[in-house]
Length: 116
Image (cartoon, rainbow, N blue to C red):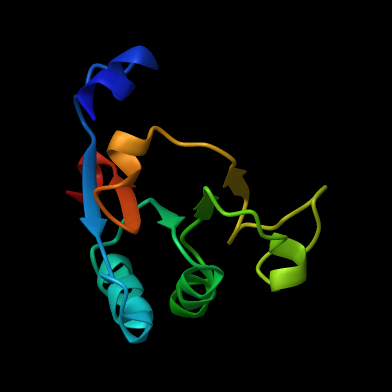
């Protein structure tokens, strides 16, 4: 993880990454996202199934959700208003992600020092 952050010009200070994995159990999606919401994270990065994104969208309307590595239409999924103006809840989508970072969990978040 540090290498990727360093490559982006971040020194690794003032950032905490929380990882959670449903370990293939789709019934854990909502529980995991509620857990992350309870941690008062600044952003959720969702890896895995579109149903995990839907669970995150159900768990929060205030924390931004970034879909990573999913080839799914966020508008069609119902988590974004449009591509031009997705709204606050699901403002981004990543088509690729450093797999060494991504493989360690299905849900990730970053929180600021004020939230730690």
